[in-house]
Every structure is written in structure tokens, then in C-alpha cells.
Image 1 (cartoon, rainbow, N blue to C red):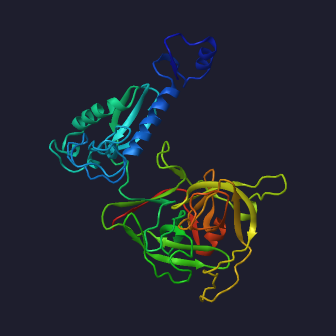
Image 2: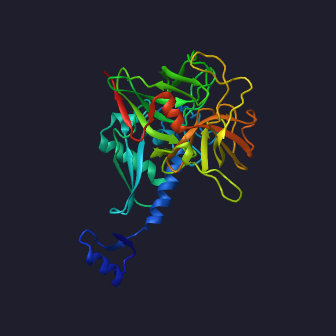
Image 3: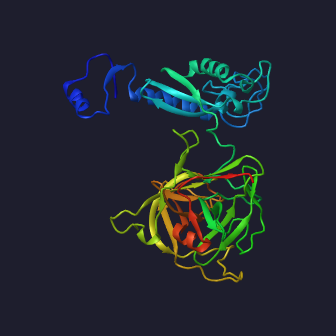
Length: 395
């Protein structure tokens, strides 16, 4: 246990240390935990701001001449508003508070550096040389002591998670990652709304994520749920990382914009607002409206589609069941493109978005959002939502 300042530990603190063999108290910390955490968060925000599409070439110090296309300072090649170069941002793979060293640890992977410039990339240097270059560049962007550590192999080449934009002609939002038995093992993939692409039992639209095409396996807009499952194929080389994560925060949030799925909740166990009793407060992520939250007001809602009716397994139109969940709230947003996105609370998967009111308005709140309960989705698709990450390797 590191305490701030040079004063001896108090009698109470010493008594705690004496009672526990695994507790050591030292009072030579120059910075409190709060100070280190604040500095780490500030650096994290700057790095997030600097990431994005970049055309600038060169070493981590941006010795190239082209300017980056992400947020930046006009006329200053490669510089973001926070002053952090895009080349520096892409090599940082983790940040953590080092209490023993009373510093912030910055993990780097030199192999992620941009293309060659006048000084070459840090990927061409030894790790020790790269570490020195990065340390010099970081020095102006953090006000507490820091160390540069080996973060190679930390950042996956391709990571698949919920809440991201589906790449297709008619795009929606991916929901949660899941697995489906194939008889000899599992197909790993990701779920979304069944009406995305079309509402039929046979999907004709091709969807992809990170440039990887995800084959359709099963699902459609049925009377009991609006869901479909797409598998993530094993890569031809390298690895695909299927995370038990979904986007739940703004892209610049600390420590990262993702949350882990810790479990699922049955529709019958969801609390519905009645009189003065509040319902479960849930949030949803959509590619168009972002992240917003509201209160569950009905767990037996019936969808009434204007242009996409519910269908049976043969594709015939049927009446939608009273099995969907309705969410309302003054700050709740929802619009076209949000369909399929995750609905969640505190790491628990509640469902995936099926419908919303006023699909052309992505800014205003006070919307109504309807989602398919996650247990209904799992049962309909014969899948299990992932609560542990999986790595798919090339054959």
C-alpha cells in the first residue's frame, strides 16, 4: 500500500499492516491514486481523439508530410486538438495505473506504427529504441511519471463485438456476440435484428464487419422475436478475436468504450414501470442515435409493422406476438439504423433493438424503443450469448 507524502504511517494504518502479512505500507508516493488516474484518463482521451483514419506517413513522430483525416489542428500535419500525433496513438495498446511505481504504465507495440517516413518507422527499430522514441513523444502529454512497457500482442488484429455498424447496403447495428452448436462444435458469430436486410427466413443481403463477410446462418422477423445470426469465419491467416463485449460508452471514454457481457436476463424477470414504481432502466446502442437510456414500460408489447410484417418459417405473414419489450424515456433516442443494436444494463444483456418511433429523427429524445428479449432471441436462434471471449485461428 503506497501512501502519498513523506509522513510516517498513522498508528491505525500500521496496525492494519501488522495484522496482515500481505500488506506493506510505504509513505513515499509523490502522487495520489486520484492524480495518477486523472492523468491516465487525460492521456486516454487524447489517444482516442488521435485515432482514426490517417493518411500521414512517417515515424511515430510523424515525419511524413501528409495531414491526418481525423480530428486535427488545421495546417499542422498529424497533430490532433489534444496535440497527440496519430502515429503515436496507434502504437499504444494499453494504459494502467502502476501503484508500486507510483506512475502510469503505457504499453506499446512498435509493429503497429505507420508507413515509412524520412526517419523510418519505430517498427524498424529495436524495442529499446522504440521505447525511447515513444517516451520522448509522450513527455509533453502527461504530467505524472510514466513508464513505457512491452504491449506487443495486446491489440487484436480483428476484434468482433456488439454495438458496431453493420456494413451492408441497408446497414443496421450488430447486437451481441454468440455461439451456435454445429454438431461437432460451435459456430461463433454475432446477432442482429431479423428484419435487417430483409424480413424473410432466407437472407439475401451480405453483411460484413471490419471488411470480413459474415455468412447468414439462421433467423428472420418472426412472431416471437426479430433476430438473425451470422457466423464469423476463421481467418485465412492470423486470428479473429470474438469478444464478449459491446459498445456501451462514447468512443473517447475511459478505460475503453466497451463493456463485458456478464449474463442475460429473462423477460419475465424485467421490472415494468407501474404507478410510482420505476421499471428497469436500460440503455441501447445504435449506429445512428448513439447511446441513450429509458425505462421499461411493457414486457408484453405487440409489434405492429407498417412495411415489415412478422412471418412464419415458410415466409407467410402472421400476427406478431405480445412478446416484445417497450422502453420509454425523455432522454431516449432511436432512429433508422439502430435496429439490432444491444439493449443492456450493468453488463446484463436484455435484448436487441427491433423498432423505434420517428425513424428519421436521430437527435430528439422522448422516443419509444421496442426490443426482442434476449432469452427469446437465444431460444429462437439456438444460440448462447458469449460471456467469455474466443479466438478463431487460421486452419
